[in-house]
Image (cartoon, rainbow, N blue to C red; front, side, top):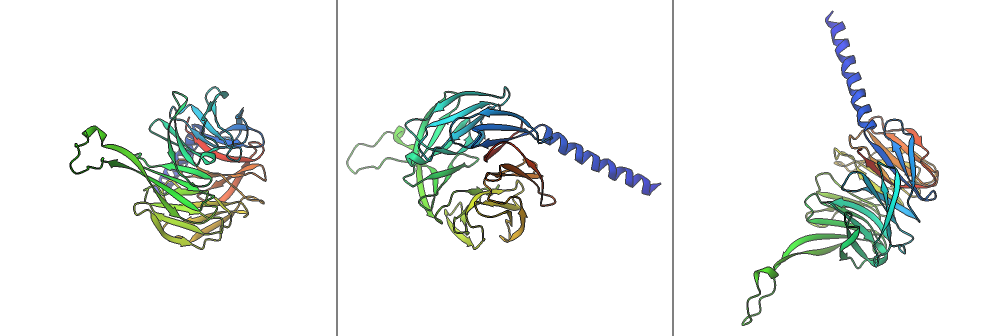
Length: 344
């Protein structure tokens, strides 16, 4: 009888876990930028079926869910020439008027913090900050580097990191208090002149460094270099602490799993999703997912699955992170690239 009871309890736990996962998936959706289709695909998290395809303008690249949790913003890149962000009503599954970011050009990487949207503007060698409620750019940070590509903002908003693919550098901005210089014999500047400003530190990495990932504890930055190496930065010290001979030539995107244990890397040239142990920094698995290179990565918030955009093969690979194997393909549209998760 006790054996039977234990079996029943185990079965109930298993079913409960499956139900919890199903509920998590059913409440979320994968957002997929499809470049050749010029559309944002909204994919049901439970069934992996496309719910809608919404037009998003010329040469779309990256996507982020806005601070209201109901709207998506997509960068229109155009080899650093375009000057718009496409806007999608996720609930209504329809396009909204695009936002003009002129005079900035070449929006690409996107990040959300404190109700604002940060974006890279590679054509202007800058970062922009958009107020989505007002639909306008409210501030700009000059980077002065070539092809600024992806951006990340710390939880407290005091540190910003951006990759500069054309210069082989990482920009680290710190928000610091600046006090006016006091000149002997001159009147003391008023206290109101003391202000917060951004200070940039440039850290050399490898050429073609586009994708990077910041660890969940915000201590490390892993940067993929075009030559197949990975630069690991100490974020507090703002310097490279290690360079891995990682054999990920053409590294494109990197992503930590939510628990911080794994770092996932895609490459333009390889056939595998490469998983690294974040602690030992060794490769734990090379997972076959495509034939001709991969790009965007999105990890489901519960850490159970990863979604990998395979643009030349025109599908999104679904990887089970418990079995470390590809389990499905999503036909979201032609040339999938940027991905995001919408916890609807």
